[in-house]
Image 1: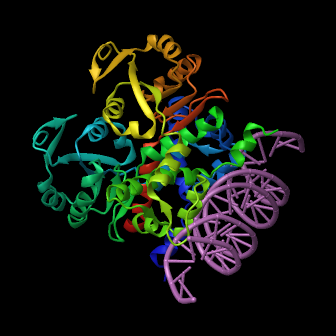
Image 2: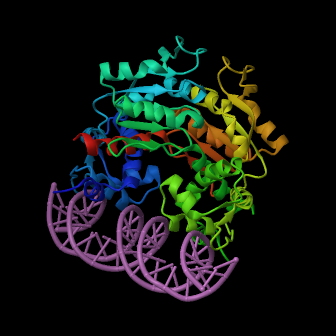
Length: 216
Length: 216
DNA sequence: TAGATTGTTAATCGATTAACAATC
DNA sequence: TAGATTGTTAATCGATTAACAATC
């Protein structure tokens, strides 16, 4: 019998997973141009990747190509979206309706990525009851109730770091199983809850170091 | 003589660079608690990393620790910030004052990361002339002039993908040498310009796949 | 058919982890 | 001193890249 770790071990490399959305954007472009086929060399030219890497990445999704032609555009879009679970929408909450939270609420692209943000929550009376980009901001205390009633399993955390762990604890006890964490701390959660941390400062660190190589 | 590639090759691994800001947040916490020393095991407990990995990462910054004690908190903060170039502020422009751009303008944390956003630019007459979080939004056409006059070398790009490459071309010809790119496309720039792409969809892809391992 | 592109197997590369002597 | 923690050298692991036969 396989345990959880073993599943993780045998699975698709995360760097490959991170590249899949990139392929989707190229595919949408090809689709718009009514192209039926796309090859790994097509991808590699636009994305500055090696064809072999693209081939390896795509192979992980299970798609099978045709020598000399490549992959069917429509089929590949479907396969990647399926692989990522982006074909069926998951409902999600957003917690923390500050500047970043508002920006995320205003971004319409997540529906293409399987994410449907149905409500926002905040602790501050200043924003509770208001609507941001058409989505109502509710009092944080109401979250557990609504999560249970609507069976919501996903949450986006955009609160300040001082509040992040408390919010996470609240989410976990409300039955949330996946957290997209935009706060700059590591959240402690049980084994069956998945956290993905989005860290702007690490991106900025990479930029700084790359720049340093030229400046210094 | 070393060429550019060789410098890159011999340099600190990017995964290590990405973790450095994480160490900084822990260090600030220790500093606040007036602790003088911090060990790699201290870090590893808070961040769920292996002590050996922390030691390797810190070694890249050039700091030297003391057996049995660890590292001096103040000295390590200084060393990491120095390594990242976050001790002296670089002035930066933000291009694209939409939802995400506004959120970034409103985030006060970047000053701690060596980044001082001094102005925003946009093409839309609706926002030009307005102030967002205290920063003026100027017409995009004015960017080259102001960039040259103020010798600004950094830009944050938060425009829609349809405009991203055009904006990048404009930035490059205005003398910008570093671009923090929040649009979902790969920008084509000359060799001496550094681009760091920040890609929310790749983070969401990882979350989706991790979740899939539990659901399916 | 010839040649481009696939999928697979093997080699390389780089990052992580382990082992251990040095040291305060 | 004993023991915790460092820095270094070597082993392991995983991802990328190369090589090449299969195929349309």
